[in-house]
Length: 241
Image (tube, rainbow, N blue to C red):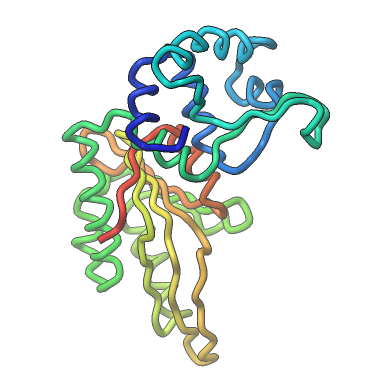
């Protein structure tokens, strides 16, 4: 099953457990895993995936011609020698799109985009207008010494970046709306101050956590799939404008 409309309809018609499974698979596209590995990631007991898939067999066969919004490989064809399950990238995008996104989460996406735009033009006051006074700024473990709390500590971190880079710009490639969390796939463009060394890479990806429209945590991840996991997998992607 590849058509986004079919995947959305399947998402709406299937069980809560099946939707939970779809969310986990959507958070790690193009990554075949054994049933046991996926069950461990979900905190499920053994054999639950087999039960869940069996439970949607009638739905698949009667309404979708037997097609699946995920990929399966049996023990004869898989590298692990066991049944493996995954989603391709298109199925994962469609599954994330099928999750509910209400007006508040749409506003959270807008505020996240406004924050990045304000940072890029170095309007720090505008960038911080929706910050909680105790906001956590969390960088990956290898750069955890730069993690901090509160708007003024974050401002000092930004000023330090400007001492290192003559130019630094964050370009959103994709927004993923997960309600109170918004993930952004980022591309970094920059030039080192003095050295002139150029930066053009997907270095970190951002997840912003909101409470009642206020940013309470901004965390950065080395890999996009890690950011997707942090927002729970199933969500609504939006192209950057």
